[in-house]
Amino acid sequence: MDNGSIYTKNLINFLSEKKTKFIIKKADEVNLSDIQKFHSFILSGRRTNDRKMNAINSKIIKHAVSEKKSLLGICYGAEILAVTLGGTIKKSEKQVKGEEIVVIENENEICSGKITVTESHRYEISQLGTELHNIGGSKSCKYEIVKHNNLNIFGTQFHPEMSNDGQSIIQAFLSI
Image (cartoon, rainbow, N blue to C red; front, side, top):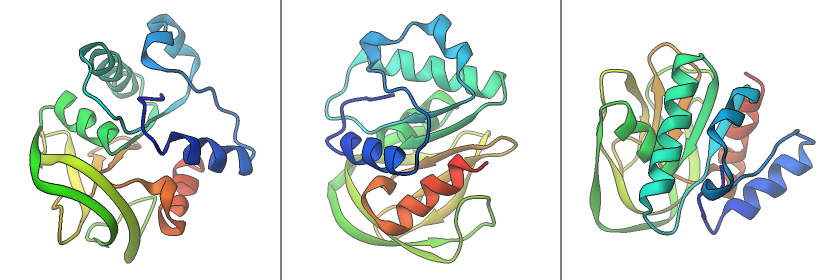
């Protein structure tokens, strides 16, 4: 789902290089009956807040949960994931931008150790609902990577498409 992030082109380039079969759609192009066809989803970041975009992303998340499909939410995608599943977001004290070290605190299927990532956001997850748990954090954000308790549904507060370590996360997600 292309939510308008300036980094979506980097995500498309990465997926293309990996010869991954994918379809990119913007919120106004999504027919919710069509989401049944997909076995996994990636929700990009965004530039602006839009109620229709929020509603469509929430419906995709609810579909992924109910149908046990894989999902990766990137930046805004992680934020709408948290909100949809009972969490909250808040405005950051300042824009978080640039390189950051994320420490992986909990074992998971997509990453381990310490990873170097690219941040670019003004909002962040502030509380997780009961269906998500924290995988890793950084100096700037407590919830850098979150995961659904029982499903292959992940969110990254950072932009994995913008760093080698982050691209490894996308590759691991695609292999699930």
